[in-house]
Length: 498
Image (cartoon, rainbow, N blue to C red):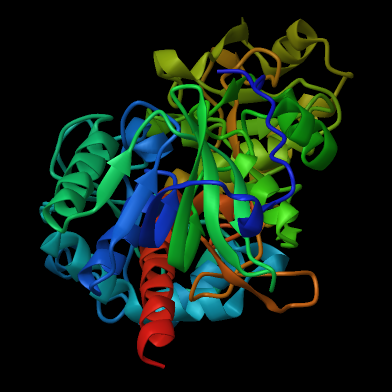
């Protein structure tokens, strides 16, 4: 997909200008993805009437298109972690997530999630999701089996391994292949229906509705060509996705992402929810950040190779998570990126990676010439790497010892991981600034009455492409979606009985 759809929600509509209300609910949710339906489940469980307005013709959002990985652990570990000998402490998870979230980490959100992640895992199971205890220790992206537990981040890679014990926290549902997201959303939707949540599909929300005090009290949606107004007593929860599909917003806020060749999301990831928040006075933060990946593994043997830029120099420890590799590939000058392997480490990359052989030669010098690199650049890089690897060391980049092997067996191969040829997908990580409980904040740090948000509409747990771990977005959306649903339902109760 390419970003093309534009969206420009206007200023909020005043309730005094509403001629007719089509409906009213305790909690009104914009978006039927993981965040929206999780919010709906907990709001309905608290006794609130809930209406979800969804742009598409069905539920699921971007999560339904994903593998469905959920990043979770701490508090001694999940059943899958414990069954495989991993005792995951809350502090290890907290320390890892703080580094993974980068310099703009929200410590309060990281702390809340780390301390209640196992409770959230139990909640997921209570909704009907099924996890087994199988573990895949090798580096992979999407398990071909129904295994649950995998490494989905930089847990074993430097510098993350220096601040927290390396623990796998990626949890897949007990399904084979890239279909876990669909099963996750089917399960959550079924539970929401059981709780009496109402859904209106093919509903494009245009703008929010506010009262004379500036409190958000509803939303305007276009349904079957008509503008319909929906009121709410507890508040509106924006769960309408990121802005990956809005080229104008990418050009303004995250222009580096336009170098990618695949934009992950649905047409609903057009930034409309963020713009509605702006219209109500909200602050958006971290808008320049995104997740970019270079899926150069599996097979795991390719991690034994070395990644170089157009100067013939390494720029990262190759055992890093593929998202971190993609992030730092984007930081290099020019587009050319190569993975250098010898015959012992070389295997064909997966077909979906888009990675082809750029050159092959009997010596590194010949490979260097084939690639058009400056003389002695690649030769010196390989010589230094081999000298240190033979001693089991990598003082420049600290690659993990289990992937640290000298490249000495001819022939040598250069795999083309260049930004303009290999597969570089992305999505945005910036959004509305919220409290952990879901309230949307204005630039002064004050809550906007009646407005909540969760998921990629917000700047949540994952905030740095350099530290992103697969499963963080679904973990963030489901966990903080629940918090927003609880807060909106509680606000309705306070109004009734306060």
